Image (cartoon, rainbow, N blue to C red; front, side, top):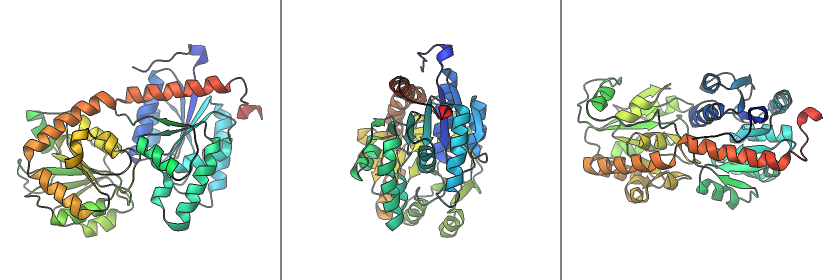
Length: 391
């Protein structure tokens, strides 16, 4: 359980500055905020008003402030930094927690170390870029680290990636956590009912394996690699479903072989995850992806690419079966064929994944570690740090 050590009069105020507002980052922030509200923190979320994050954070009990910010840096960056600074002064937080590259850029420029600042990259921005843009992003992260009292990485491999490019920081590794009350296994008749409720087109035999990929339809998540692999894998009547939406939607639809189902964005991925025989996430880069943790908490085996966080998510015995190199459709096709042809192996992988995930990746554990970090930083800063409101 997550417990507050401060009295009610001394409750910490934390401001989460967030962009993007959908996908895994939004779910991580929403779950973290809900745990912090339950623990008695004064929690504020500043984010773009459109998207599921604002509604989810408000429902969780946080105060939500509109921070109009585009996903990538652009000509509006100066205005976004100014607006972030104004929101921070109005909120007067004890701690600022900036999530992902854009909020990390704007928040640290606005504050510049005057309030304890936590930056959480949720996968490094320079991994998404090439050439000069990647170099600029790397240079900024090296420079911006001086205004981060702590950088939270969600995996040891994400931290090592940052260190490898020369980011000198005070690091904390706190694994992603999920709401284990929401993501639970279903068995027997309940599993059959869950599958029967899904909008699968045509007549799909009950014994046909169902393969699901949950993620934003984007270059990062690698659905294009999955579609190339699917064409050559020996899948024996299995069905592939892509759950999510994003900028690659039309391109992926054109590239998909017949029979692949695109569901679009889903407000609740649990029916798909619980009904799946296998969840596949062929990402090009991650910090520690959330969808595999959600699937494994439901007892669903996963097949991942060997990017940051994947090895730490999986039980060690899964690595020969469930981990392939990124951007390698041939290796992905071979792993798909092997797993889909062996129901007993999938059953065993699902059972061991369930045990590991439910023991290590509880969001209450994650939230407790984050809270202890906040209290450490505030305890260090209170004698000397001037708030923005004092300027």
